[in-house]
Amino acid sequence: MSETIMNGENRLRVNNVRKMRGFIAFAAGMAGLLFGLDIGVISGALPFITTHFDLTSRLQEWVVSAMMFGAALGAISTGWISFRLGRKTSLMSGATLFILGSLGSAFAPNVQVLLISRVLLGFAVGIASYVAPLYLSEMAAKEDRGKLISMYQMMVTIGILAAFLSDTAFSYSGNWRMMLGVISIPAFLLMVSVFGLPDSPRWLASKGMFVKAKEILCKLSTTDDEAEAELAEINESLRVKQEGWGLFKSNKNVRRAVYLGMLLQAMQQFTGMNVILYYAPQIFKSAGFANTEQQMIATVICGLTNVLATLIAMKTVDKSGRKPILKVGFAGIAFGTFLLGVCLYMINAGFNAGWISFVAVLMTLFTITSFAMSAGPVVWILCSEIQPLKSRDFGVACSTTTNWIVNMIIGATFLTLINSFGIAVTFWIYTVLNISFVVLTILLIPETKGISLEQIEKNLMDGKPLKDIGV
Ligand code: BGC
Image (tube, rainbow, N blue to C red; front, side):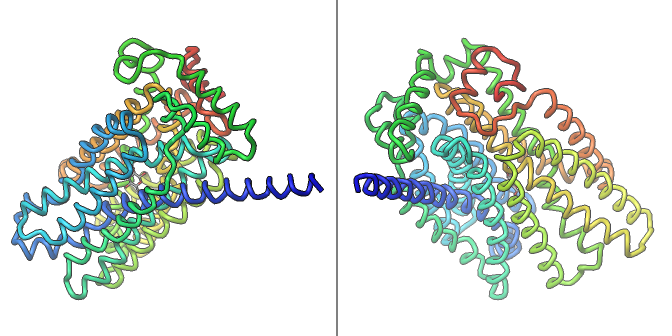
């Protein structure tokens, strides 16, 4: 009889843990969705905004890059907010800025207000891209940490696709204000869901709130013993006295983790994925997708490929691990960009056989797939896993800011590269970079699947080589 009651209680607890984890995944997923919506929305809205405000090409560039600029600023400053006030408060400030930025852009009476709103939105994107993976890494069970952060990345790709579809829907009426304003709806949903989120037990413990930390760990674990053991591990990593910048200056191992995070994000951006996404419509055009409707189909195909290939990462990242899929991904991007370069070289040299354009389209999709199943999610996963607790905010701020700064550099140099070297050589530059990333992955990147954040930290602080801190 009493065993039956125990079993019943246990089942109830397991159910509650599952619900709680589901809710956490949903809220962080909303942050990912908004990240994707905001990076995806502007391409469809820009032509209408340009006509409305009679923008010069310089101002058009500003409207696009104001968001990247805001994102870099947001990522740097969130380090402080997230460290002092916690992950939950940071997500809340992100949600508020998403709402303000979307409504500000939608109702902008002039280009100045639009630019300020775009910086605010960027700030929100910077916060979301910083806090959501970090929060998920701290809330997840070690066995499915990778899957959870890949799910967040999948929401980013769904956001990019959804932005395109909504842009298309509003393009018939030319209503750019609706394109930008409609994003305030998921932003509002994010805000409401953040209210119900628990704060991260790791952050709470780092601020000395052990009782609260234990309470949340109990809600996330199926037994009290499991929660106790996790809290003990967290306490162990809090024995280091210094924090953040101080720890970075004084501790070589912390510096190694910070540089590794920055390198990973630079690698992700230098794969050239955003260039491929940007250039894809042209490639499809040369393959005969010439009219507006066919171009739209082409963009949907790229967006869907991006979403579906992220599913591969979700399925494999906690089983075969981070490192193998990173190697396969970088090698795939190298292969794809190489052949894409060959096709574009041939097309530009006047060979206009249909199969060349067909191979170019195939290689575009192959490159997108290679990125989405590897560096897309895995870099965000690794960056939130490798930083020691006491300097986690500082480390993740450095890596996320690197992502946005390199993203800006890639955007700003892309046209110059094409004008100076031609499109084929531009893609071959990315081929060489991706080959070198396979080597860097072998030499430097750790395998962190199924290992607790505290064990990774212990290995790092014990001075193990970077590639072995997950072993
Ligand atoms: C990258 C973005 C990219 C997106 C594409 C993210 O992981 O950080 O720069 O646009 O993936 O899906």
